[in-house]
Length: 359
Image (cartoon, rainbow, N blue to C red; front, side, top):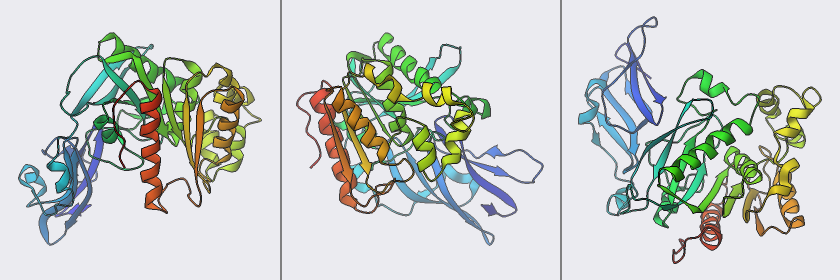
């Protein structure tokens, strides 16, 4: 966004999304001093130095703010109060968490604590995996059917959100390390993060659960074939194999890109990076959701996982939302039902008793 001969842009660095400015095309962007958190949807005018933006952080719900200039972000004032209700409640608190991967790389994620239990120890832990994979979790506020970490935290879970290899905000090398190990490399990062949390006394090793949607579901499906430590899994719109997924989704080029070729060019990788060929290892009770008209991750992937778990006699359930595509946005009740059922599944199998799910 151009303003008074400078370019303004939001940029992610780790778990923070800050506002940056550039005065000339040949110069580097410099960070504008503001609050910690996430700046997005920046708007400015050529006739005024004022800048409007949406800002949020873990403990500050999203609102529209107005600053007199980009150099005065910390004096910005909110001009909306859409989420005032959240400010009147005891919200979960959180912080970044770091650990070392097996190859020495430092990996970062977020910890979102139950209200009133910030930095408590030996907590039941829900590993919540972001989609993308080119995305990241960080210091921002969101509460919906897709990102429901705060809803889980209010039910007593410590929510661990790992920014595994393939996440944005950590440089190109980190981003590209997912190719061609589309699930195995990120999977190691995530499990090593869980190991670190247990070793540090933060996570209760007997009360671990896992879940995610889209690529987060793809990753969840893989992880339950790699370990039996998770007591419950909630997965949505995630692939379990790569050939049919390559051939049937509306972005088949991304599968070939992440796996390093088309199915007949790297057949072994299409097999080795697929959960279905290791599905006999699964012991985790698994809840699945999908949109009936999903063509981004074809719904047949969820049917395949459901069939496999049923064949193995693993406790499981499949919830299909008719008429929905990949984003569950055609009927607002579907998102509410999705999260309600996922929280109930975690409560039933994950080791938390007495929590009440949202009605």
